Amino acid sequence: MRVVVRIGGSVLASPLNPQLISKYASTIRSLRRAEHELAVVVGGGSISRKFIEAAREAGLSEEAQDEVAISISRVVAQILSICVGGLEWRHIPTTIEDAVETLTERGIVFMGGLKPGMTTDTVAALLASQIRADMIVKATDQDGIYTRDPKKYPDAEKLDELTFDELIEHLEAEKHKAGIHQILDPEAVKLLQKHRIKTIVVNGFNPENIIRAMKGERIGTVIR
Image (cartoon, rainbow, N blue to C red; front, top):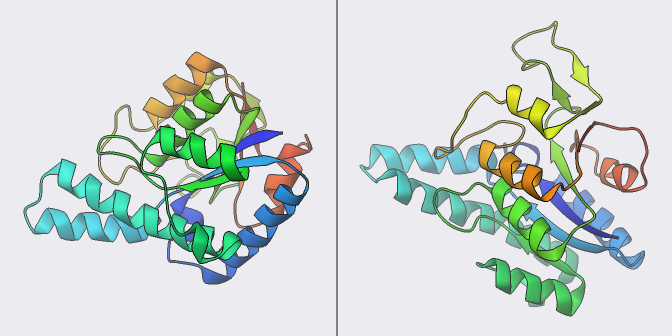
């Protein structure tokens, strides 16, 4: 199976969680031993947002703020990559083409952000369409997608399954901005909808949920 694993920065980097990174490394090695091909895309989380704020206060443009956030996401991806494959895996691709080449060579690739104006959700969607992935599994700080933000609204209801059209109705922000934080960003959703890429949103604080989603167990929220 060829899968894009999108690990939210809210899971690994809000704040940076070395123990969880280590658990993900173990899970990823296990999946690779089972001959799955994996493209792992990592976000920068609250660490990125702190640097974005600092860049903003220093007078940097939004494009420059995004560049800073991209650098942070690549560092987080690099830590995970080295945990899995050693120092030889320290290189983090900076283009989709480079990522595809790395995936072809070793059956696994790690990525952070790519360019300003593009979130790591969109990176994952682009890569999934390029490699014709069987699915995307997104590990987040929630158990799935809810009717409203469950952190703000106790009466929010979890959705077990929905279409991409229905998902768009639940998005809070309609366009990208530096530091955007929601279950899936709007540009990524458009790409996923266009290419009809099955996406499963799971709680990322237990890496085993990635395996469960890939096995087809009923978990999280399925979008198709």
